[in-house]
Image (cartoon, helix red, strand yellow):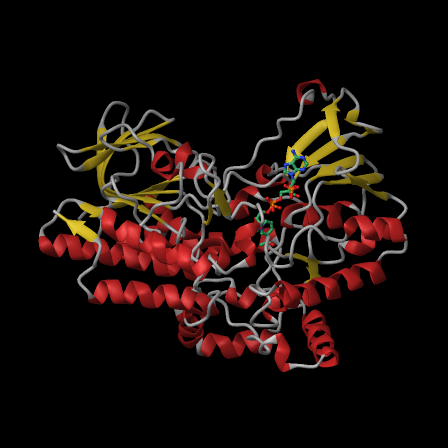
Length: 541
Ligand code: N01
């Protein structure tokens, strides 16, 4: 198969075996893997560079919350050894450089069109292909369509009344300009205190004239204890990276970290506090996995939550501000834990104020700033850190239609419906990477994308071996997988609290936890079983 279709003259139709949408980490690996397997593959990316979320989330303070040596591709020892990280938790510019290094090393750019948005992808049953159109006027046929568009990539737009009247500058963390934004000395308002808001606030507070942090729901944030990368450790890992990859596949989060200490009841109260102290001192996500029953037993969860609230109390000088920063309305680990580099102490600085939107909600944006019910904040810059239209947002953006004119999310109005997270019934030859009902946002995305792309490539290879032109998930398999996902999520405290990982059926109020909660390791085994059973649940015709 040839790889020569780089640019088509206007009006000429291109044809590929595989089209990949998105050139973040999933897209980069997919382009490499399918080319390696001899497919005529081509990628489309809307941005003018590779990197996906790590391209767009260029806000000050953006940083990974898993240790850098594991936040990388591990399938190729030479590729892994060819990059050294400077920090224990790498910052966005370094991760973006790394992804460019990977794209260059794997030679994926020759099969990639940047600055090109897919505007529609229609399944044509007669041809058994997708007909894809782009904003640059290209028309492309693809036998297989791989959505590497990410789960947290379509920003939730700020829809505050009056935004158009604002005479200052405003930006979204998730779509930060690629050119520097002047912050020093400016009056800044930041709205949203999830992972993005917490990171951005910490960095902006360093130079802003004044920073107002507008918080609706306080989050639990844990120190990363960032520092220089451990080069000796990296050198050791270079020699056994394939083993590291296997260990990551065998871990519940696709990332080797300290396991549970045990059930909380295995320890005295004093021991519990000592264990929590040592996890806090180590930093990062390990606190989330302290006791094996903290995700299901509210009393145990409260021991961990109260420990973190105590830390917040200790770090903040003003008791009233400390109270406002303490999450009390939901258990810890239910929404994604924030990992920070000095977040809470910024509220002791004279140039930082916390605005509690629960007691004083935003009314509108004015020409000069933000009007809340009781106050007005005059600012030069507004930073929106409002999160994403998670899971379906980016899929919808590509405007994929099956032969009945449906979009994938039309099938998910009541609940997510997929087979193993990679396919949804009624959409032949359409594959999703790290999507709903796969470990997705609960696992290391490098490992998740590696596993998913390999799995999709295997499904396609199986179809081609059989001479099939159409691959589809069966309804029965989808139901079975959905039931399994729900059964696993049923005892979890996290299903009960609204956040982007929970789908609430607006027709009957039923709740579905969107990612597969059984653990990355168990998911891999499930996939292996399905493969060993002749790709059970996938229909090849
Ligand atoms: O988004 P979020 P995020 N008025 O949805 C608030 C990953 N990530 O971009 O909680 C006022 O968590 C909203 O308030 P509330 C990571 O997986 C990773 O921060 O709805 N506020 C909340 O505070 C993460 O989980 C890293 O009450 C409004 C915030 O906006 C995921 O991305 C770094 C509002 C949104 O928080 C998403 O994180 C960054 C309104 N109208 C992100 N609407 C790493 O460290 C929303 N909010 C790797």
